[in-house]
Image (cartoon, rainbow, N blue to C red):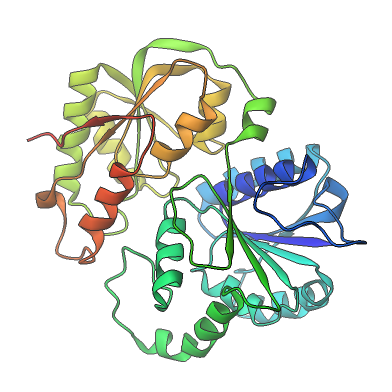
Length: 357
């Protein structure tokens, strides 16, 4: 049995992409499966959704869970954050499954919840699928031997971090390849993995086979980001940049990130005149299903790497706008500018737009 833990719609999408890739011919770079091992067919994979609390993520996850079930996968919805006793109940209920699993698939190695579950893992095989651009930082930190910290955090270690430090340390050991453990990273991001880690390319083959080709409209669409909500970008600077891009490129719709606040989106609509769209699925599926603009505009984010793959062969142009240093807030991590520049600079098959001045 293969067991996958997901906490976001994108993670579940990439688990489906991984299973699709594994169900076909052997993938380059992966060791031959030993006799008696179980491939990742639908009846061999159980997806456990560690449900978040915010309504937008829950809604998208429920839609993705429906798609996964339609593909034949077993999906278990776990209210992992439903009250003070939920974590202990979740650990108790999932413990036997963790012990039996031949391969563990996770979507967010930075998640404290996932790290806690990894302390119970006995499997020799572990796969990390994309949770967006965070995969780039995860692989880089693993290669440098650093503790796992999200790129937009300032790195301060409060009481909670100190209490969980042993869990994080043990989880990092579980994520480090050894003679007894094989680690795979299934990603659409440009990464340079340390020795011992197998990197398998995610080209969104399942998405392209399942949806589309899309209907293409004449105008442009703009993709939102949660950089304001995470304390990285100043909200006024972001509003001005969105207005500039909409005006310059004739954008008519704004696809909101699931973490964007309602107040911010109301203001964006009032100032720019953009139609705000709250997608019910990850943007890769929304775009592939269509209708979608002939040009898709984005700030540095996961979609500048994934949309060119999902939309390959459609003629749709993806353009990425840089984040100017003066847009960053005092609360932004010192690593923020370099990380965002790396996200933009490594994007392939996109048009690069300078930050508006």
